[in-house]
Image: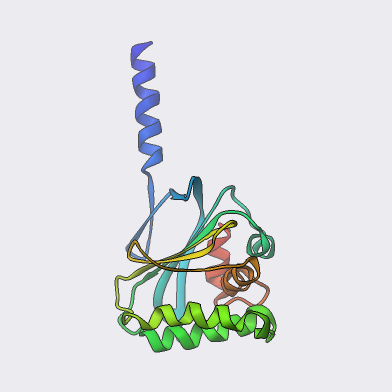
Length: 186
């Protein structure tokens, strides 16, 4: 009986700290978001012009394959962006993200433009470099908390903003279709 309990405890500890590796980036199978435990839903590589530029990972309270429902959900979620290329600069990232918001909202960014501007300004504080990790963690009562390498930069409030932001990767016109498939665990 003692051996059975020891084995069960060991399996629990190992599974708690299990990781997935994508393009050299280790992703924890679970993370904490406030008081919530989020599970890795999926991950993938964002490519542009054939080059791998970052690894994206999506963490949710429960696994899902419905990108639109995830983007619209008023529940804790987190998107991790691990920069894997020196070709990514702050200005290129901002331009690409602006395009993503246009696609995600069908060109209707005006109602959330001030929130988009606040978000994009966070990427001008320090030049983005290979190895940077950004966590975009949504908590319904607070908004999207933006972290760079584990340090919180700011919070952008509103489910409307979060829906548009997560829609960049998960919406009907995503930034990268293969990345979306990976984020949805397909």
